[in-house]
Image (cartoon, rainbow, N blue to C red; front, side, top):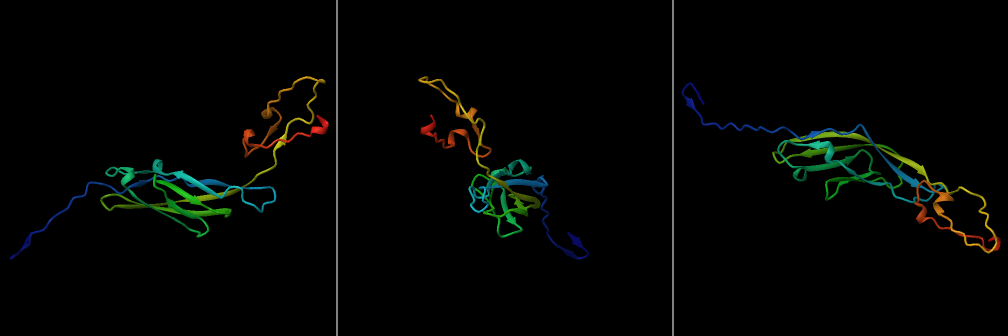
Length: 169
């Protein structure tokens, strides 16, 4: 570059890549399941949210992106696990927080985006018996499919505990 009598060598760096693109959902919902009393947490409000489908970069493979996550409420911890998934630990929190992701590619270009994380309380009700009485003939074997007589919204039938009243059998 020369201006008048002064000459200077300069370098121009052309960066052809764009910053990472974040196409985050407006909101993500997870559940915190509690028992009927509302006092004991049966499942801590945790979730693994696959975020790779929301992030793209023309110059950097997903596994090489630097991703940071921050929650607007310290009661809800967020971090990126070793597989690039967003790990959420809401503990016993019920409500809504903002989660902000900052993504940096290998060229140092950064994008930031946020979404609402809604932690809903689901009440774990007692299992429902679908029949009151099973009638059998005297001295006859009876086979009962337990899935036909009980259901539960949060527990698989094979994980339910059944007890039979031997006095009335």
